[in-house]
Length: 255
Length: 366
Image: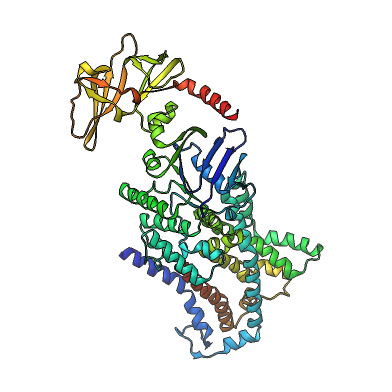
């Protein structure tokens, strides 16, 4: 009991501690070296971040994350279902191929594919979504495979025998039972799009500015720590909020 | 509401080259009757239900419901409902929404769905349980809800796949009574699959014994008990006595002696099978055979004894007998056995039963 409480405490410190200086910096107008706390509080950081285009960048990141989630989640669900159906001859091999984007260095893959996309005259935005979807499929596949392995197909059969059409089975039995897993897979895929830096930089050629790009650019310059802190927080907080929402969905489904 | 079901030559090969899981099954389930398919695990009995329900397609053969061929008809349009061994209640729905599932996908108005669900819950004696979440039920309650859900779909045929075998003995008895009661009230057509002869006996009008994918025998349970056609059927129904011998001129010769048979049997080698309930222990003077008690097993108030009869120049024979309640006999006692003529039945020896099955299948085709 005590050990588990200590463990939970340590975990909370581990997760929250890095955010503390960020929060302080975000609200600091002046904070020079020896002082424990900022000498002057203010909203300069916020104003600078907005001036740097944090708002549109966040919208772009959100659109990118959503597009990746919308594409990678159903694909991962189909793959997870196929992998557990017993219909594949070598499910282990197929699974390894689907996971391969995790193993390959994204920089190399993105660089190579960027050339291909340019030659094919695929618009940068479309190419970016495609590449990040491929990068997100391993996550959605792993989550959905586990969900389908635990899913009892007899529920679907029972529903059909009670008169439900294939589509009604999906809507009223299949999806509700798999909702927590779908939400989890979609969240991971969203994160891939939301937080990507390397692929966006290469494929977008620096013209497609998302939040991570903005954070990277601001952090590589000096003397604007408050702005960097605000940008970093605006990159961290939306996923955390999303996670809380998804967690509550999962809890409701388990009840 | 109840339809009549006709399975004809139903065959299913799961993987090409492997022996069929179900081989040429022909079976009629008249409207309002209950037919049980009885068999050990792996006998293909669940395959019968899956083919009937349209969950799997038969390799050969047809399923007719009220004269209409169901080939190519999807499961949801077959007018059947199935109760599996596990309740399979939808865990995200309340008990009422589970029972109302069929009506809801049929598009009935919400209020009517609700009323009909309550009605069906009352039928299985779970009135007032509607608001509970499906996962908050005990095993027996959950299986009742599963039954109510299937009945609420108003199936023309109700398919039951070992629905009570996961329940403990007391609950199973209750469910048998409940189902018997529902049959009286609603007269559904029921096709039941079970491995338990007692369950088939309690619920079904006609029983089809299935072994290794083939129909072994079809008839009322009494007939199967009294006149099994093969060793497999006799064993599946709990027959213990198997005395090898030869049939000549309507009499069976074996270690038990020369016994008259009630019905003509094919000449040649044959195994005498007798139900333990039919055998009585008597004084040596009235006995058909004499032997020594070698084993006594308790079965509640009754004892099941095994009597070994030494043969003259043949293998000794073991005969099982069930004693009347309260009667006792010690191991080692010399006893006389009385086997009523009507209880004697001769089946082909193990190796020959295959050949004769082939012949009877041939007869059926002609």
